Image 1: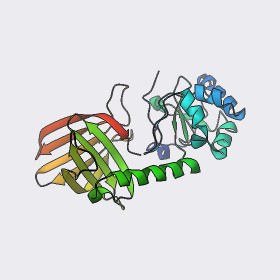
Image 2: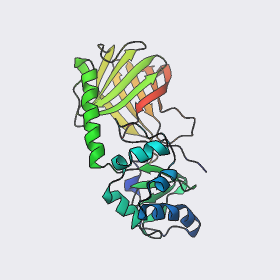
Image 3: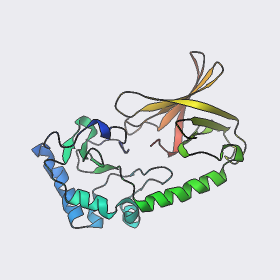
Length: 255
């Protein structure tokens, strides 16, 4: 069974990988991964990944095996390689329902076909690259929205370009531009003090921004099917839904 291509971040703290031994039927899925990391065989590791492999914003996803090999040192450092290579298949790996198999509380996630679907580890090289990209992102934005602590979402819908940024201490800001405008233009609307709400333990969540009687809600899809969009932009007047605009493309998903 194939799972959606996403990085499962919000679930890791809920589980203890040492609680149960991994069922024997899944050993055949994990053994090749451990073997490839022990041999430091980059081609073999690349072949054991489900693409695209998502990386933390603003780093782009890795689209295929060739790109993984090219960016290998961004994703894998000595710490992560050793952690996988030296892992005990019985005590360090655990099956977490339909979500997949995880290593050590979620640092690596594998689907039941034996493909790596998530790596929740960021190397120093990735951190440096991300900082440079965020700096470039700020320079490309209109000055009124170029200051923030962390970028959260950057979405394109059929009608709007929307983004959410964390200004610090959980103060989320919403900005949107009508289709055809550039993010270097002044936003059509800017809203502050957004509220983050998680829906159960699956990771799906939403950001809600108020503007008088109007509510702007960004529904973020973390767990969905292969055809699920990254999310939706919904606009309400009081309780009446005025707009439901699916995301066409996402520069990133929330991390």
